[in-house]
Length: 137
Image 1 (tube, rainbow, N blue to C red):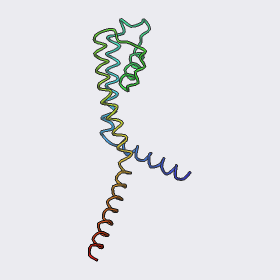
Image 2 (image 1 turned 60 degrees about the horizontal axis):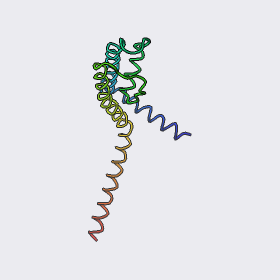
Image 3 (image 1 turned 45 degrees about the vertical axis):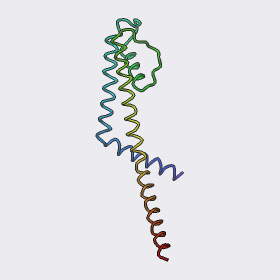
Image 4 (image 1 turned 90 degrees about the vertical axis):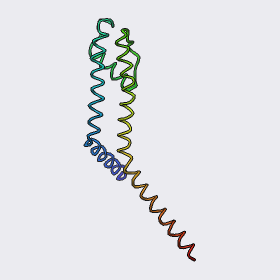
């Protein structure tokens, strides 16, 4: 139980360190801006042609689904401009999501990796010392 609490505390502290990073805020602002602009453009281009109850919330849902690569497929772009917006959202969403996940995973794993690297370096040093001692004899 104490080990679980310690792990949770470590993860929590690492997440707080990540949130303090300017890169986190830049990625968050950029990603959310892409979603919002995509939703606005989709609503502008598709609201006249889609079903009568097509709302901005539907366009926002569509934009989030495309950017996060979930893409439920509940809407199909009809206009050429709408299709171009969706392509832009797909490409930028892929880059955004992978960059965001890479940032988060690196922040969570890098302290453990640094510890393991230090331990491996120490073992290598000890092995070199042992080899030196055996060669001297």
